[in-house]
Length: 72
Ligand SMILES: [Zn+2]
Image (cartoon, rainbow, N blue to C red):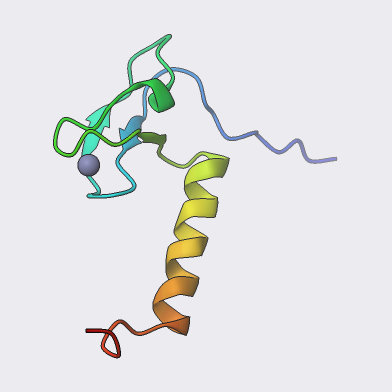
């Protein structure tokens, strides 16, 4: 039987801004969602977290389904 390691969400890693992709070091004991992007002030996401993955999927789908060339 193989034990799969869960994604390590402990120490280390970084928080990433969903708006402008700015990355900051994750601080122990401080959830990324409580951090603000130093650049645009948006709430940060933990890089590699479930929410970050969802966000990335959403972005990918968006880019595929509506090419923003049609607007304007
Ligand atoms: Zn930002």
